[in-house]
Amino acid sequence: MKTIFVTFLFFFFYYTNNAQDSFNKLPQAANISCPILLVDEHIIANKNIITSKEDIEDIAVIKEKPSRKAHFYNLTANGILFAKLKKKIPSKTQTELNAFFNLEENNPVYVNGYLLEHDTYTIATESIATIVLVMPNEENDLDQKVINVWIISQEERKNGCSL
Image 1 (tube, rainbow, N blue to C red):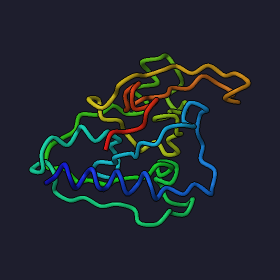
Image 2 (image 1 turned 90 degrees about the horizontal axis):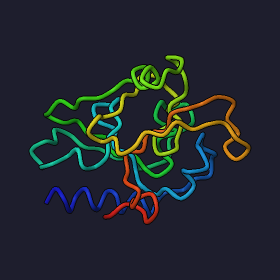
Image 3 (image 1 turned 30 degrees about the vertical axis):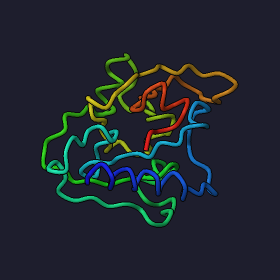
């Protein structure tokens, strides 16, 4: 039952996404259609973090596109699912990720190509598929090196998320 519910939510986001405002993103994010899962209001994860319906304490979705003032606005480009889970989710802060790459602690961090506009977000360690150090170039218009954390697989980047 949980699988059907989560599948429905991802299907809902995929087909109701309307991106009229611009999002702060890298060019690699252009073809991404996978929604973000936000656990306990600050941990960014992928759907695989939920292994059974017993993990879920509460779940919610955004029905309408939030205003730019919402903390999570830039994460909503492909939809967002909020979950409170009964289990603890190990995560890394943006500062910890930057330190690993010898970057300034407040250096910008992207997830699936979308900028994390607030430093309160952490990333679930078991959701990290790949971390890429992105160098500035004409295509991405960056003025410094940044980290892009992929929480979706190469296959999902190419073909979209499985429903």
